[in-house]
Image 1 (spheres, rainbow, N blue to C red):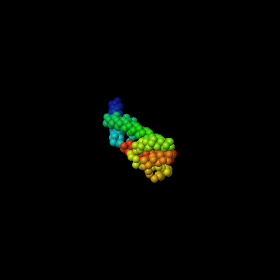
Image 2: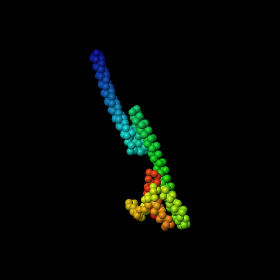
Image 3: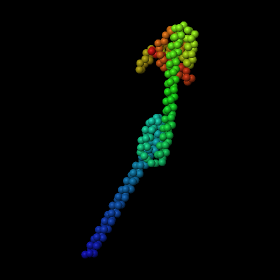
Image 4: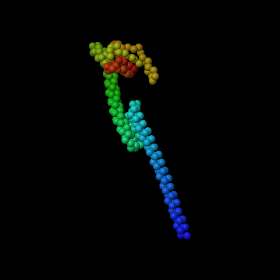
Length: 215
């Protein structure tokens, strides 16, 4: 009886050991599968990040702010891969360089606008001085101011356009004239009721076309 009991206990023990081994093997296989899936998912993220980073390096249409926003999204993934880290550094260098170029353009535009504003004010001042000298019968002074003003233009034949009508879409002009003729007209009329609307500069920095509008 004891022998049978011992045999039964031994057989039960062996079955338990076998069940445990099978269970451990199943858990082990499941763990390996999950690890493989995580590794594949991670590699897919890395590949996608590398592709996006290379696209950012090749893209010359985005501003530095746009590039930085895209880069920050990728950096938030915290992908600890040397290839990704190297590409991030290259994009950061590109952003820094592009930002410097943008600031340079902004400064150049600001200087250009200030120069145009100064020239605009100079023209209005010259016109007013021609009128003032003509009213005082100081025609030699008026003629000198006319010559000084013409020197601001590409030539005495530079076009002057006088706006007679303007809305958001259409602009109508009086018959075109030249700067020399217009300045002599001011001297004769002794009146100036216009203002400088805009002008076009030649590569030389002198005015090649002037638009005037009513005050």
